[in-house]
Every structure is written in structure tokens, then in C-alpha cells.
Length: 220
Image (tube, rainbow, N blue to C red; front, side, top):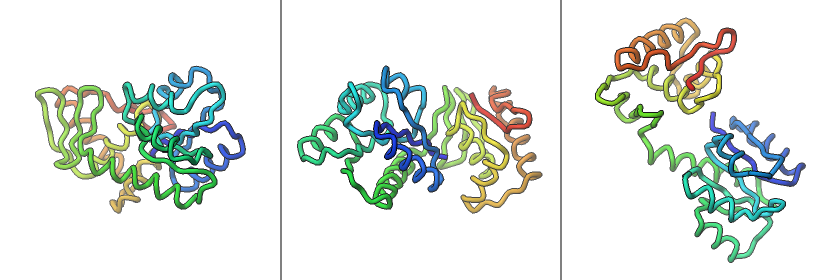
């Protein structure tokens, strides 16, 4: 599930955005205290940011500039500032899109979807520490070691890596595979997880998939 961070000081609008995103299968994260905001953003580790420029005690453009020093996370500016100057400045410092308030929720969702489609199309190699998962040919490489994964093994590992640091339930994984038109039941999932772990151990990746009893699985 893609994580979208909402940086918006208007409580009512922030809550509306959160509900909108969650109703459309995104994980919505928020920041309500804007002190030391750059560190807070890094901690959240979002896949995309919705940024209002009018943040108390800090310029939204400054946030863009600071993030772009070390991050390529997509940023959509969602703001009441509707001048061409604000748009040009935001885009020149690294924003990926610019939407003015009031906005049509459906249009905002389409903009978000377009960015994710572009990113997913550009990047077929997912990096986890020193490990590379190649989505084009279903291979995983750890230094000099490389092996081929089955389609389901690749998708399970991809889903865990994309949600690294967060426990995902068995139902989460099954629903993800079902959404990708690969039906898998609970017993089949157990078989795939066990096979995936055995394969990973052959390339010196023992125990990277942890079981959280009663909760699910996690990659840290």
C-alpha cells in the first residue's frame, strides 16, 4: 500500500484528505506539529507528499529545497497560492506537480495515480540495503549472489520491501496478490513464504523476513 504524507495546517482539510486517500486504498500519514518538519518527514518515509505551501513558521518552498538535497520522493503542492510565480518557484525547486485549492478530489487522485504510474514505469529495480530486486526478470541479487524468483515470490518480497519497517498481515499480502490478479489462498501463501525464505538463505539473506506472531511479517 502506497504511503502518502499530508502536510497541511488546516485540520478540517487535512482530515478530509486523509479520508479521501484511505477510501482509495492509500495509507494516509499526517504531520500536525511542524517543528523540525524535515526530520519528521524522513521518519515517516512516504512514497508521496501532498504539501501546502502555507505552513506555520516555515515556507513550503524551503521544505521542497531541503528534501531535494537527499530525496526524490514525489511532491504534489496543494495550495491556495494560485499565482504563476508560486507555481514556477515550486516546480523549479523540485515539486512534481502543482494543484490549487479548491480542487476536485477526483482530479487530485488522478494526479497522484499518474505520478505513481510514471515512477513504477521508470524503476524496475527495487533496492533494499545492498540487495537489488529486479522486477523485469524476477531476479534478486546480493553482491555476487543472484537467483530467480517465481512470480508470487517476487511479488511477496516486493510488497514486504515496499512496506519495510511495518508489519504486514497475511491478509494484506493475499489481498495484494489478489488485486494483481494472482489468486492465492492461506495455505499457498505459507508455502510461498517458506520457499522464499529458503531461496533467500542461499544468497546469504537469512532471516530478513521476520514473523511477528499473531500479526504477520516484517522486513526491517
